[in-house]
Amino acid sequence: MSRPPTASLSTVLRRHLRAGSLGLALAAALAGCSPATESEATSTLRIEGQSFPRTVFRADGGSFEVPSPPTRIMAANAGVLDALSLLVGPERLAGIASGGVPYSIALSRGTLDLSPEQRDLGHDSESVLDIAPDLLLMNSWQSLEQLQVFDENAINWVSLPDVVAFEDVLSNARLLGRLIGEEAAAERLIDDLTIRRDQLDAPSPRQGLRALAYSNSGGGGYAMGRGTTHDVVLELAGLANVADELDLEWHATLDIETLLDLDPHVLVIAGPTKDELRSSTAVALESDTRLAQLRAVREGRVIEIPPLLFTTNSGYLIEAAEILSAALDSLLAE
Image 1 (cartoon, one colour):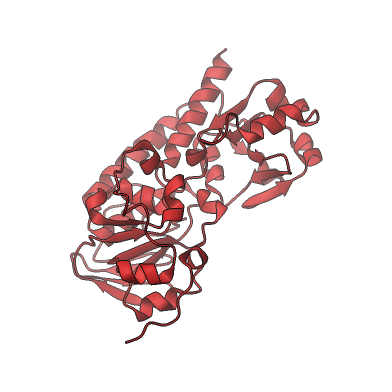
Image 2: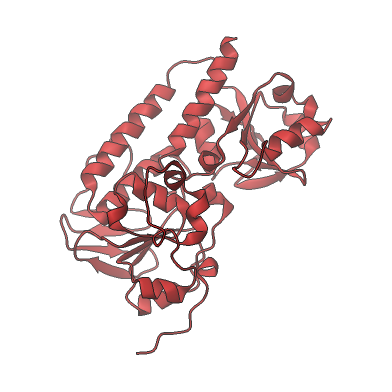
């Protein structure tokens, strides 16, 4: 049978800065909960079956059967790939849509070794149909406009909601474990992440400091408010996000006058990318005489986070909080 018209996967599965900012707000899978029961319901998905075959019921009303643990999983973005890399190796993956490769922490560090073919899966829907993954994973912020094409061609897909709290990272891990048959690996990961979260909760002078995750490439500034993983990182580090004082959500434009009025104790910014000698935001903070008046700039409390960690929505975000916490603890001890 002929295939329906297809669209570019870069259109179908657009990478949004939020995932870079990268929620898996799944009600039944919080830290410390027991492993999934035979029928696991979430706010978006339901997975039935204690063992394989399992049936996945999606929020859009679609469903499909997973007869056995998937072995050709395709990640539509870097955050999904990084989350998968914490549970399985390359032998279980079809690969990643090539546009996501530069944003993957696991690939950049070499902790996940994908072949050139696995790193360069086509961007168009026709290529996805040719690859024929047994599971296609994406995020809810990606466009869903052509998913009917995948349904009509028996491509099983799951859209994972956004991470808006640390508990969502744990839920994400547990959900992926159920989907791909790696429950034990998921529980080990959850235990590790929970221990590291608890260590960040230890008393410290940094706790309660007013902070802002901020971006400015010279053409205007942005504050990361509620609903971003930056907000999650600040909370993990025990910091108060000053974006809440203005009721800001997601990536909100922030003029210099308002930033000066907020005057946070700490600014958290992305460090330089591999193509930069210096962070563009750091340059903006130093070169604009108004921004140089900020308390965080004057007192040396501008903390740079590696850019991939600055935007991840996977379990790696705990590392961003650890880097931020350690840097602040060191500054405050001086």
